[in-house]
Length: 299
Image 1 (cartoon, rainbow, N blue to C red):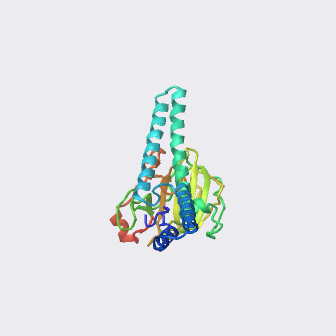
Image 2 (tube, helix red, strand yellow; image 1 turned 90 degrees about the vertical axis):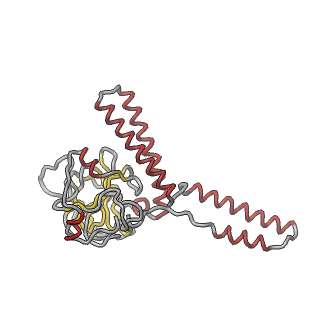
Image 3 (spheres, helix red, strand yellow; image 1 turned 180 degrees about the vertical axis):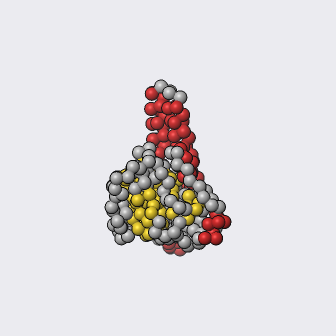
């Protein structure tokens, strides 16, 4: 990703300046010493408040490692639930495994929500896109067509940057699958669900996040136009916007993510997830894409 929405702990400058002044102050009366002690006590309380409000290690490798471990733990728990159901395990065992999965997700959700609020992630701060003045467009629905249970997010594409790809275009690793397309190509919801967020103004540009019935979220970023609203129910194949080149990009494409929560930091590999829904996607190599499109730099 070109820019991650991760909070960074700043150095408490007020404490540094106060401490420096107290070091140069000569020993005086008991009143002056008491004043210094009061200031230091207040600053300690303030620092404690900051540390409890911001997740430990936010914006650091430690924080990324913590969220990555939580994502892996959730996926292991989800796989266990699926396996128990396939094996017709007792209901009590399935329910216990599902409670474990939900507990892992709840912890990850709270952690990333707090981080998103602190760092200004619009999905956590302005999920309806009101403050960003997003380019909302046509809300008409396709008439009378039968949609599949799951579908690809876009048609007539080349696959470009994949999940976990390395490179100078991202601060760490790529968190989704990029589909190289012409600007203005229709973008579709991959499955039925509810629109969780329609935001704009950050590195993802204009984006839509949809919550699906299985509890996962899909993200569609860098759109030129958004055709749905927060809270709206969509079905598989419903057009939710048009592709574009908004945000941190150098050319038109769709950035597609699958997440455990609505927030940055909870992405899972999107193509295996789609394959579990019987959706197959494929396309040309990245070299072929580069010959026809500017390679996407950000998400």
